[in-house]
Length: 187
Image (tube, one colour):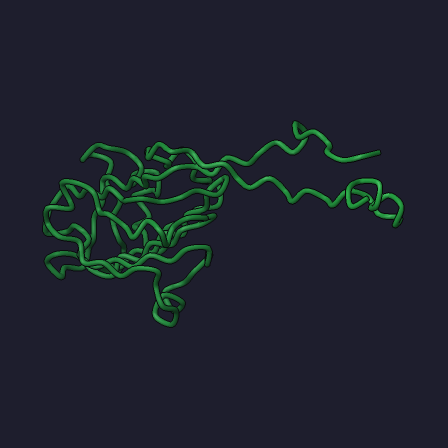
């Protein structure tokens, strides 16, 4: 009498099943297409170089900082993602980012915020990483709705930091469609 009969006799029903967890994609891919460009922004951006220039792969579409070398990206995703690594390219090595900090799920952030809050990671980008991937500590980026990237300075210490490519690689977290789940238990 410890089964369904006992629960029904006590006025209870079957315990509710917990919500289905998000499924994850196993492939690490460029997830830039999941960035919500209507919400995302870059602070200290030269007015003649739009944010979209960072998401291209040509040296003619450049994103530049305005009044100093710092850039602050507040990027929102359309759905939660896992992030594995970044790809950053610059048209000139001297103006390429050197030190960057990442923050997750804290958008929107300002320059004051990045000075006051500890980053998820603080990285010095090596010259070879500007030709390859900037590997992140993957376990820290498991459920990211928004990502802030603070570029603190550039390689030569000049007033302008330049990018011609910013790619975020990872995998989307796919939400289960609750409508397709079947009811379990006794009626």
